[in-house]
Image 1 (cartoon, rainbow, N blue to C red):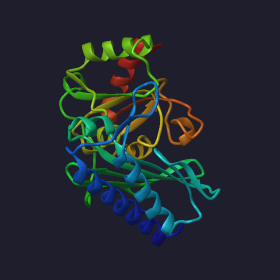
Image 2: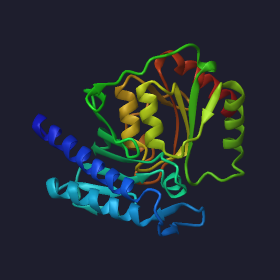
Image 3: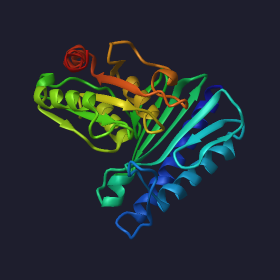
Length: 274
């Protein structure tokens, strides 16, 4: 795609995410038809399904030759090196409980590399967007994550995958160590919004344990383009979907922080995992 097409892709993603966010806001707090996706208790509502269809239709109308993976509809579109990933309602559990922490995550990859990410904070109506090599923005304001004070007195966030069980000893050991090493460890249950807070500089680190899926990729690019350093638990850099949990379901183990804090946070993680 050329420069004009990149702008179109971003506009299409922002428009679709905003429409899905508006749909969610209209139904927030109302009586919902809630179903369990699987034995783990993951939820899905009619809003998830409607928002998913809305976004897929918006993208396919402009890019009919692209591939698309969405949270509810699954795989669709043509075979292509251009692949969209869509989570139409990130934070469904929060949404169903009446907690205003939910959003939309849309990303585009080319040959396995994330090149465009859009996140919409549905409750607040905020739009975040990032283009590979071009930076990250919140509604036109360029984002730059910066340190504040010291890491141990900062707030970080914990994200874990749906498949992580309550008795996962690795997760329990790491989370316990983080809780005792840091001022505060948040669990928002809306990963895309968590990444947006990190890119904004309001959070100073994220530890992601055994997670993958459509709610990861846009946030990952947003944070990187805002200057956040992102590695696996061994300190290796991440860039490709195949390294961060792609369609094959490979899980991701990620440490993300502003560069000034990354080495210290990585050391804390490795104390509990290596």
